[in-house]
Image 1 (cartoon, rainbow, N blue to C red):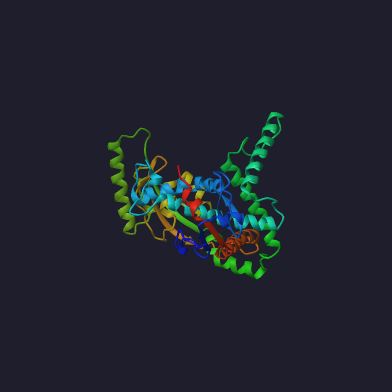
Image 2: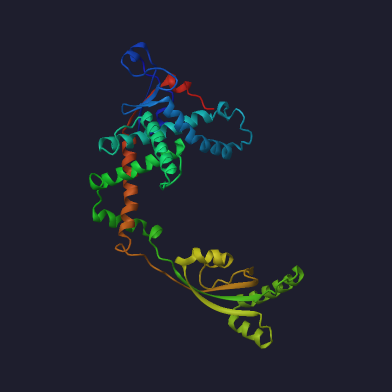
Length: 360
């Protein structure tokens, strides 16, 4: 029996990919039993992947593939999408590859969870049975007036995500106690490598705001006059005139609708302030001291902002964020561990079954 390849090896980097054309001898070895639902399309380190399971994962990736091709080729007409070719690029083959990539990664984690006693059956049939039993349990709880957390009923996609995420959490926790347990020095090194992205305190900024109040119901023509007035004031500020003195001068000339204020803001609260004063926040985030903003409209007024000072907030200490560092590092370490499993996995694909799987 001569092995045949459907895809070049680079399509599944690091995985030994063997596409096998089945013969009678293979059937006699029990590699596959053909029927629409239970045909085995592939094996991951010997663990079977049925066509039904493959079709399920194809359903999970189809929307992403369609979106990718829409962006890449500007597709608007999706008729016969899965049977078409775009400059030799076939979306059906791309979807199959994405689905198989996902299955390999999932199967390797499931096999590890099985070895560690977290789950007792990783077949697709068991997943479907568990889904039905979980929905039956939820239906009974609802009928008895008992609390049900989450949806009253899961669809298959939702149950798979629920099951797989819980399995991952337990597997990660188990590994963290055993082969992936991080040393304190590892955690400190990781903290230093990510603190700029994750643990930087917000800067403290001091800025001034010069506002010209707009009367309720002001006409567009009157607003344009006020806008021109503020543009002239802004030009004076650009030349170095003190906005506080400009406001004082306006008050002496009985133009009390021009108001000057200074404020200090902790940028850790920028999200809250962005909701209340989005235009103002746009102009001070990332700005350097001395900046005089453009004229903008917000909160029934025209305004100009000047950034006076920006104080570096520094970092949250390692001790303050140790739990967060541990959780973040374990996510990285876990993903690297799965990457390693995937790089060393053996994926055996049945060419005939694989090619017969259709996308609808």
